[in-house]
Length: 324
Image (cartoon, rainbow, N blue to C red; front, side):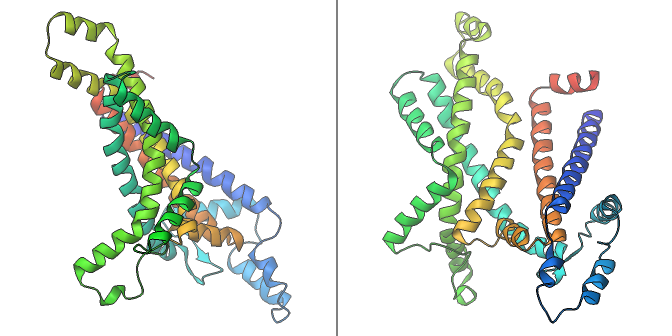
């Protein structure tokens, strides 16, 4: 298991280097930057702009700039935001908790919904429960997350009983502890519900197909022939169906992060999505790179968690990696 973890961590580090370098290259090759916008201000002299370039190392070779940024980023010193006039690490630290609140909540809810429904649909293949569950899955898989968010926002706005944006109410600080929790949950409803419905729909289909494949395998047929109880067979099917399901944790986190970024912008949730949008629109180099860096680390951690869970569930995975 130790060698398996070392190998996965090495792969994650190489991936992190590749993603950050390509991102840095694309941003630098894009026309214009934040300092070019300052040139439009007649009160800022060219000497001041050149001094800022030297101060932030933007007058150096592209590769030198990247190496210096990378060495600082490895210690989580992500530079200084031109737009917010604050350290990038502080800005991300303020927002990352809000994004994780959405993604972790929707991930847990998606799994809580997808595993039992996918298992039921697979065991009741082509029967009424399977048809109802498939209808649910196909319906919400066909909705883009942003469009579903608009629909839910429209419904919520018609009721007038739930908030339609932001993270808390104006009088949040005056509420009791229970009131603050309920207020936060009310504001989380639209974004978490949107992410959960879209994510669980795809996971249900995967779980269903895995259950059907294992249910019809020679091993399960043999267990039935030996008169093994249905409960034991279901536990065997569930354990084996979780293998391909578990490998998708990392990809699900990737999808949830990208989906959450879009939903955050739509509902005005103060997370990394809205921060990154502001950074891109203002061409704030260090803020964009800092957001991409932290986002990539979150995705790699998600994939690493999936690999570890899969290795625990199926020891053959560790053996294959060691052989490689």
